[in-house]
Length: 130
Ligand SMILES: [Mg+2]
Image (cartoon, rainbow, N blue to C red):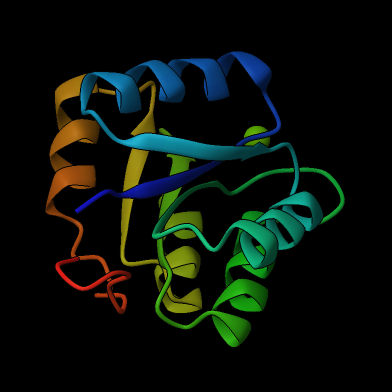
């Protein structure tokens, strides 16, 4: 089953790193967003299975964006991306509904493992034989 991933980070180079990691994991990146407001809009239009969500971003934080997205798309799996030393942010992200978290700088194998272990919601299949 194809996993559809949305990547959210205000730093373009971090989004690029995550795109390369997703490619390695054979997961399709359906979109990118550069702040929490953009993340909400893209989540609603693209309906990704998984979102990699930066926490500290302009316009709207990853924590608020997580709450807003889950209020409308409760089955979305959101993985928080925090920076080393921001443990209190991780707690807030998990309280907001994130299912897991990864820490920058990224350990590529760990990110792949977390993406592959994330249980995505089953969607109705299209076509007779799926
Ligand atoms: Mg940031």
